[in-house]
Length: 399
Image 1 (spheres, rainbow, N blue to C red):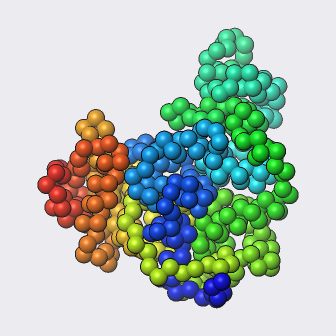
Image 2 (image 1 turned 45 degrees about the vertical axis):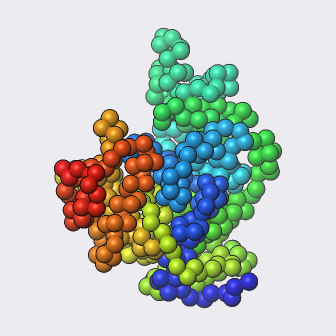
């Protein structure tokens, strides 16, 4: 058993956090990666590849995406869809620990979703009956199959709100997605029987478990980082962290350069080095808490997907590049599927990026292009790294 750590240097904290997230030699299979990070954020943007496929590529390299689909959509399911960080694929064994969130839907769900339950409970009950009868089924199918004269509830927006209320409250779940549209069904036809039969823990114990999972996934974390992983209420998270510290299940440490108190799980190990070369998706759990990314990695990250084009600094769909234990560059990528090309729309080096950055990044872009089934890479001359990146191959065409 390693000795208890009371302090970490900035470099040690980086290595602890990256190893906990499965970088370097941390994750060797899809299953081990999912066990480590516990949940994967979903997002509708599909300019490169669906966001939930990227975390495993970042940690494992090229892998079969159908294995992730099976984990999420086929028995025996290892993942289920619910509100974790945002809309997420979550380890299915954690479903009981999220039932308190389902029970709080009347207070925590989006306002429009709460309103349909408050104002039209009979209609919500009819939607539940329809899902039970016809599931897996999309909200659009429920809206289309009923006569318009039956009332405004059968318009798509009202059906969708009712489905989302039922989803938030745990009365229905996502059987799978078609494109990016949820197909709803009742939990007993989707979730493993053992999960459904598991007792519902008390709220405080469920939240402690989520903090434990977050602590293992983050390696070293401030209270706000632990809270953000599953988007716990601030007061609840503060209480749960204090309880786990008192029980010896979280250990306080000081981290060089951090103003906030930090915590590590018992038995934390500090790797001697992290040998990583990985493109990190913008919705990756490594990047969720922006202040942590800056504290931990000295990297200021802004998601520019929703920023107007004239105000973007680095591009639309930007992936940071991890080399060793530092984020050393960022690239704006797009899959040009019709042209069969991975488009590098911009490439920027971080201050202090090592001389081998362009070569290492090019290798990773080659791996990504092959994984996506794209034949070549096209590099536009935007950003201070684009020229060096283009010179690394004769196959790339500089735009």
